[in-house]
Structure formats: C-alpha cells, structure tokens
Length: 466
Image 1 (tube, rainbow, N blue to C red):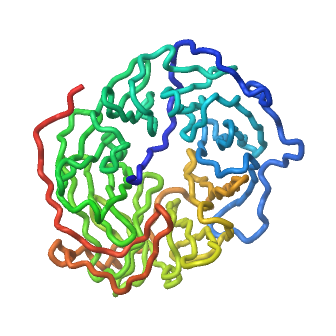
Image 2 (cartoon, one colour):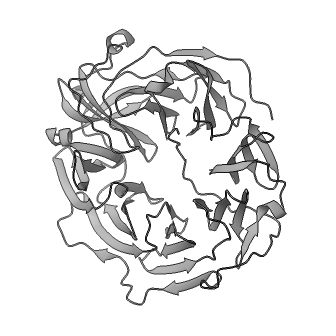
C-alpha cells in the first residue's frame, strides 16, 4: 500500500444530527477526566542551550501502545490520543499540566481514529460507520447521515469535512462527509495503485490509469488534471510538502526518488534536478512552509539546500557525520536549522535533536528507543518561535518544548555570493547512479540514493465534475 501523506491543520468541528446510544464498557465512565496528582508541568533542562532560550520536557503516560495522534490546539494546549481497547486523550496545558480523558469503548474493534479541532472520532470498519463524540456519548453518524455503502477505509480531514475512502461495488471511491455526503472520486485508496496528496491548491489523488501512466486528479477546485508517465514500481511512496507558492511532490522508495515542483502559477508540475556533482540525497523535508533537502556534492560535502521555485539554493553547511545518520525531518527558525536524525545500521536506534547554524552543529539531546516502531520527530507549533521534539514510545509520549533564541525571521547561513553547486540540466542528471550502495532509509521515512527515469507530463483538458 502506498505511503499516504496527511496535511495536519486546525479545523472547526462539524455540526451533525443526534446519534444513538450504544452499549458502553462499564469499566470506563463516560468521558471521565482525571488529573495527575504529581504533575509539575514543564520541567526545565539546565544543560547549555544551543540556539535555544529554553528547553523543557514532560512525559505523557498512556495505554501500552504508541500514540498516533498529536495535535496542538489554538490555545497552544496539546492533545495526545492513544488507543488500546478504548480511546484515551491526554491534554497538556500551555504550562505543561496534564488531564486525562477516557472515552467509552465501542462494540467493535477499531484502528482508525483522530480529532477534528476538539472532537474525537472513530472509524468503525466492522459496522462501516463513523462515531463522533457528542459530549457524553458517541454519535453514530449513519443514524443522521446518508453514509455510502461499502467497506470503510482511511479517513482524512478535508476542509471542514471528513474525506472517507470506501471500497465496494456500489459506492466505491472517495467521499466528502459533512452536513451532506458527496462522492468526489470513483477510486478508493484501498486500491494499491492509488494515493492521496495535499497541495497548496487542494487535495490531489494519484491513481494508475495504464501500465506506465498515472493520473493526477484534482479533488477540489477547477484545475486541469494531468498524466504522469513512468514505471511506478520504482516510486511506490508519495510525499508532499506545501510551501507559500507551490508544493513539492516526492516519489520514492528506499533506493530511487523523483521530485516534482507544482508552482502556484503553473498548470503542470515540472521535474526538479539535483545540484551538479551530487553523490548522496537524504530527502526533502518541510516546516513552516519551507522545504529543506540534505544533499552531498563533490564540492560542498553535506549541506542543507532550500528548494525555492523548483531550484536548490545552498543554505547551511553540514559535516561528514551525516554519512551515518538518517534524517527524520528539518525545520528552520531564524538562522537555526533543527534536525531530528537517527543512527543507521543494526542494533538499538539512537535519535538526536541537532542544532545547526553558520557556526557549526551541536547535539541538543539524544534518546535511545527499544523497538523499530518507536521514533522521535519534530512537530512545529502555531507559535513560530517554538517547536516540539516528540518521542513516540510504547506506553509513553515524550514531549520536549524548545523556545528558539533570537529572531524568528528566516536568515540563510550561506550568502548568495558563496553559492555553488548549481542545478544540472536534465541530460546530465538522468544517468543518476550513486557513489555507494548504502541504505540510508528508516522505515517509511526513506533516505535515498538515485535513479532517474524519463518523466512525461501530458496536459489534459478535462476537469473534475461533481
């Protein structure tokens, strides 16, 4: 199944009709809220700050699983939602104090769940319905809405609605679920050759049309659909990064990659070429509406490049230690670049939070995990001077809150006059073999070597109709 990217954004809760009462687990009181007796709030780290005014932590203890939903509210409180037999919501206030709310179990087992602003929901794949929390009980949306018929799959947030994938003979496809229901695509995400990306223009579905042709199909807006022709077996994963003036589309597996730039003022995406003399590419990552890529070239060694208008611009120099690191994600605040990285190879994994600027690189903190499924990543805040380093571990979510020192206005660490390693043309980049065969990937967060295939973009005049 293709990697599916989800755009996390703040959304207003939906208004739905009344639901029905369900049989509850008597061991869990309805919407019960408990508070931690020994809660000290955020705990300050006294170690030397590296580009930070403060660095604080709090441990969120929850069910013996890995939390899958972490959401910052408009008031800057944080919700951590986990699920074992029932749904549990740990809310961390702005000061770091915690409250835990347990929601009653539904009759059927479930794996898909989330939150729309302040309202939890559950996708019941057995009963083929969506349960939405109503304040003191779950509401069965099938009781108040004409939900599609078929097997329910993944669900995403789509404007102020749900975007639901349905697999079935009658209502197969993607459905917009709100006050009313509306089919917006006849192809579901249960098809292994279909995926969903979010762009600055809206949601975009890719699906296999012919053996070597995939269609980019707009789910909203009056935009021109387009065809992408290449062997998709080389690029089974999709990822998108939304910028102020466009979107980066990245197709990849652990050994191959292809990058497209979808500009705000262009109908079709264009291919992006790596800088001349590149030898390693560790992926592109977004944060605060910017895209940063880690690339090694013959002239510069490892460096961070910003992808600007489909071109790579040298931003910050790195060192050779990145030979042994996989990159999870990157953000930029002011002159600082903060990177979550992980050691490569066999054995226990150690995650590091790195701080980089023109003076060099420092390690802010390291954390070792016990299983392959546990990981640490950076999550941005609504406050542009704050970010979180979040560790998802079994039974615990570790939150580190970082307040960046100095100005939050973006500053490049390599002056334009020093720029080298300009982008190659298409012919020079199409042979694309890497210097070595190292595996820089970490699960579904691949770090790549390269092989380019010819990409053909065919404009199509058809537009989506509803």
